[in-house]
Image (cartoon, rainbow, N blue to C red; front, side, top):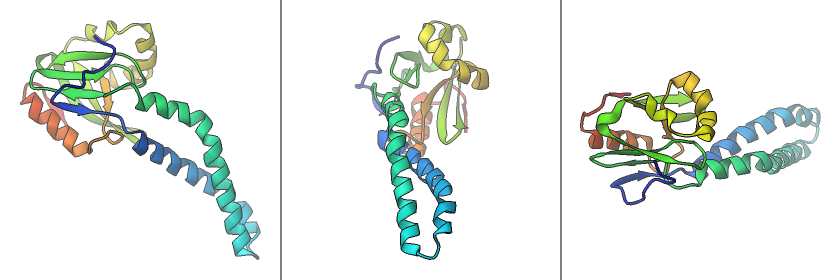
Length: 185
């Protein structure tokens, strides 16, 4: 176990703050339009004013949403790579936010799958030995416990909020694992 995933691996996946930030902005904008729509429709006699009112509400809500979502975006997108692959095995971040990473040889991986979690597609890595997850420490256990209840003792890495395309990441996992662990996607 180490603090960060080494950057010198043959295939490295980093989180993308831009992709995640744009997804947050889309959700907040739609919610703001839903909230501001009835008020703007009440002012239908002047379409220009209605449009300006709606844009004002959307802009205000986007600005306000930066306060709670900004730090979360920074935590999820900082801290180095989330996944690294080599012919010998893989490195994966053990926490979605900043934290530690673990090395797993391909022979120590029971299964690799793909799962949709809300608006995020994730790569699920199931270690062959369930005791692997127990060595992560208290902060990681607390951070991972909601996911462990849903997915088991899987380690996860983002696919659609990464700096590489999802299809490329999945192809790289197949190429580097070379059939030494089952994939499920």
